[in-house]
Image 1 (cartoon, one colour):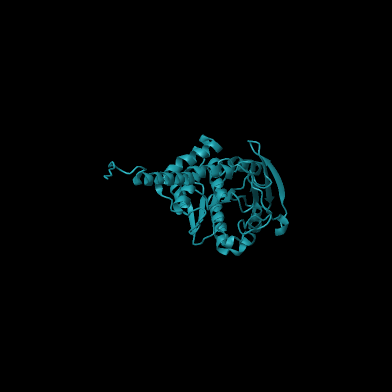
Image 2: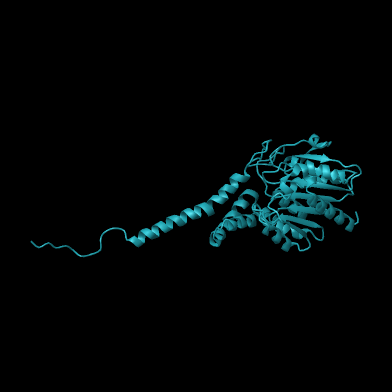
Length: 333
């Protein structure tokens, strides 16, 4: 018996087609993880109010809540209303016969602004009054949208207007001093409010888009993925804050409005939260800025993040105080 069969290729999906299909699936998953998810995560991150835990934990070591009495300070607690109807908590620590005023700003999640009572006590001893400003959407201030530096200029404006309305402060220089997101806010406010005389920005980002790109680069994410990500993130920022605001209010743009006023940029070389490259970019925007790169890992600059005993960081206190004093002497205050 003779058996016969038709010649031809075996039915089924070619092997190379299965490989291509798998590659496409993997690519889609990668795009979802690195392109689609970050803008969604951004919106979830900022559409909230930060309530401090009142205790220090391994994940959030700077979310304790202090009082002025913990530092032997007397304070005046203010409630400032902004032009866009937010209500802000602010503590004023007065110096006898003050020679200047410092406004303090803090980060997106920590430390709580009450950690700056240590700074206020130290500056009071050196003849400066302090305003500890809890920006919108944090602690006792109102708001449900964390501003990332885009909205908080109005918060600083409310404090500056009060300072200038006080006879004892009206002719005194104002320094704005912020860390992390507070550093970005400080630069944006400095660029928009000419009544502020000097700016200290610690671990600021050059722009939020730049910050995310540097973090993704730090995670070894390929450049092509980051390039795809960038316009999507920018659009997400515009959805949350408005197109014109995002276009205008980046620290890199606003530092260029310093117009001869003194700026001190501080960063740590080993900071993994806001890479030091942000500070170098900001310096390119304003070459007259003084830059101090500390050989350390601390994102919050102060040695061991010990804000409660800031005066134990002798190098930090000396650099800050010397810089402020020289700024005011050089400008005739």
